[in-house]
Image (cartoon, rainbow, N blue to C red; front, side, top):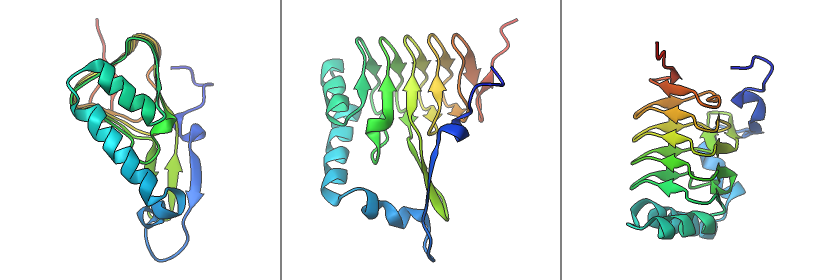
Length: 168
């Protein structure tokens, strides 16, 4: 990985939430209840619809940037609060029960970051991608991995946290 490239942490926007409660209590200040209900309905369609065209339509309705030929797996979940921060480039695959998060609610702040899945990249079943992560063109994320850092073009990562797989 290029050490000069910004990390996912450099791309996150931070939003302090002062007061005695943790930051999850602040979501109504950022999103209306109606918007969250709308998002949840279309997230449900994207997760459960049996047809890729319907899934991609629902993702588009959420504000996700959806490229040509995107394959969104059964029960895969886009961020329900900020789905508009997701970009799915042409012919990428997001596998069964994978989750793409664009937010992190912490004790004293919440963080937001765009998630980009590159052209022809693949995310395996049950993988979780954290906010601000960019997955490069033709990169692969193994099933049940936790992606905490960018995945360079053509790289394969696996594990918790996801690390490059040595193919030698």
